[in-house]
Length: 392
Image 1 (cartoon, rainbow, N blue to C red):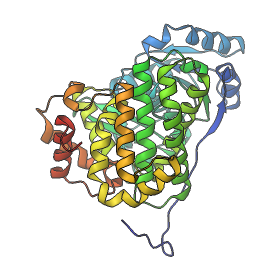
Image 2 (spheres, rainbow, N blue to C red):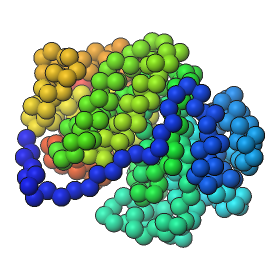
Image 3 (cartoon, helix red, strand yellow):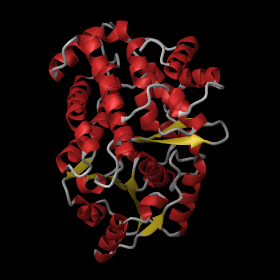
Image 4 (cartoon, rainbow, N blue to C red):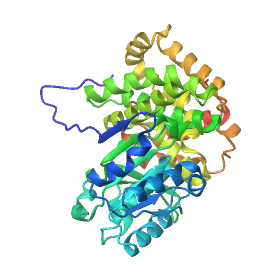
């Protein structure tokens, strides 16, 4: 296990935006907009959500408060640069002064990046999360965002980045700026009640992946690590209940909290689950959370030598007997209960571009947080194991 010299370590920590929690909190959106200085919000969501009563209620509430919202729905499940560019055109043409992002991680990411890019004069990829590229931005051009998650997974509502697919290269790229953080996140359990059992499982496993990878990341961030542990406990308790009974507001609320906690915690780092999931999603257009769910146990085994003592502490807190083996058994049992496929093959992912995916994985920004250094050979072996089920 990596030993850190705390006497000489220097680092920085930050925590999320203002959060409004509770059933019915959707009705506080207009007030949140006003507090953020938004009078003409561009409401960014996907076409499916746009047709639901909750979106009509949201727009009615905004108009009733004297605001002038316009709806933008050109958002793909894995948003691409063309979605952002279209949104920026609408934002500028309508002289909007902020964004209300409503939806899962795709809509939230797309909405945040639209708000970011609306005031920039450089191309989107100039702001990829590489080194200090974020400093290229004009911070005064970044519009405020109010974020309303309709799934409990990505935690994008408390994040400072958005994941957008570069269609030219079929790679997912992280666009980052500290001021991309939404001014307010609205966590309303009632908004997630209509989420299908399948999406409840997929997004919930995404929240688990965030918390687990953050906990295992070798960097030192005790605050984030503590948040990750409690997030895992909430998922363990609430995800099976939310999956079994979509109307369980207590479980839905706990999962929203766990998702936000995961995104807060992963400033400590992520790892090979995400570094593989990103290119698989970009190349094969798979659901991000479900891809994470399939890959998760294979990465856990891959990292065992580096994380076992930490996993022993985690299982003691969670009340899981058997240390690392006990956690792995619990994870596999949870996946089976939620209907998660055991392999990438069962998910419908072919193995035809395994080497390409592996090469993309090792340069993904999340790869550096893996407890065991990840090279192309290791990433290719992980892909092969997850594709066939070897070793689990």
